[in-house]
Length: 385
Image (cartoon, rainbow, N blue to C red; front, side, top):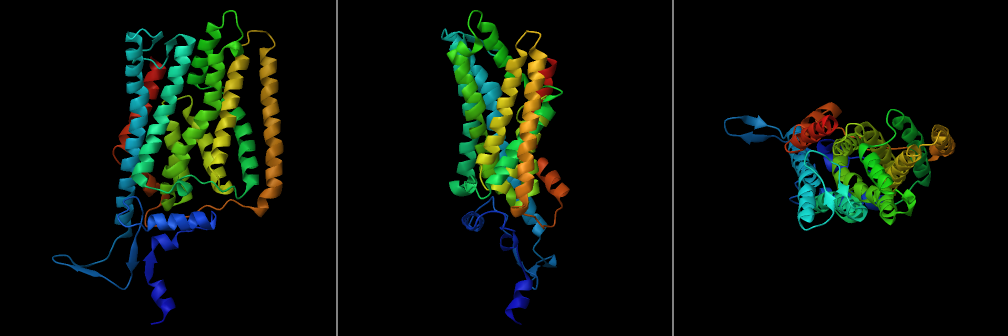
């Protein structure tokens, strides 16, 4: 039998994966990570179709690709579930205990387990919000990096192969920020924080408060960076083993659900979806970071405009929204004129489970499924309280 016939009889999911979507260094690193011995998170199935294994009492059986799929998915989503649990426990429990402790120590800050609102002095509130929002994301990032043991250059795509895709993604973010803000032009958290600082500025402009400037810088620039390290970093790369469409969907769904905010979930899902597609097209994690920065800047600007009580506010707001749409349209036209040279290529997955079966299998794995349900229940509770 010649070598070509032998090759046709071998099923190797690692070698058969479509690595052409990224640069060669990334692809080689991805293969090496997947081939590591004792890597519980690698979908590594190899089978010679001419071979069968004899098992006492069962006769001849064949290795099952589906069993390997289920086992790997279970390991991945078990770990992703605990990472998500770290985030919500820190945000909903540990942060509250921290604030209670600071209040007992005489710090001017208050909250309640039945609300997400934090009150007190401007400096104290700004400092605590920054601390909580930083740690709740960084801790899961560190956890996933430790568990997946993935090289940083693999976990965080860093080669800008196609700058045009960055322009296209940012342009899409401009337009979608306006469209998805029409029912509600802001997240509840953004509105609450800005309203807090606005009410505190009785004699000063809101921009004259150093605490507000610091919070705004953090919310619009720092949070998008570290949050994309969580969603579009090692977790996304691990999920790519089952195809880019699956990775994009799960990443977008996770980002949306973990907001624990019913009004923000659709917007976050769409923006994360655009960011993931842009990252794959451009080759760099900077693209979803830029998309999220644009979205947060738009949100903050809209809320600040709406804090103006003058009769000109609706005109200013509508002009701003129109300008954003025009800027996005111009960018998309430029993108369309140049995108034929660099079409988006998605790594496809040809396993024994369909896209819907993969999602069903993944979303029922504990504790990922439990954390997702808790987030939805909390989101409903925050609306009702």
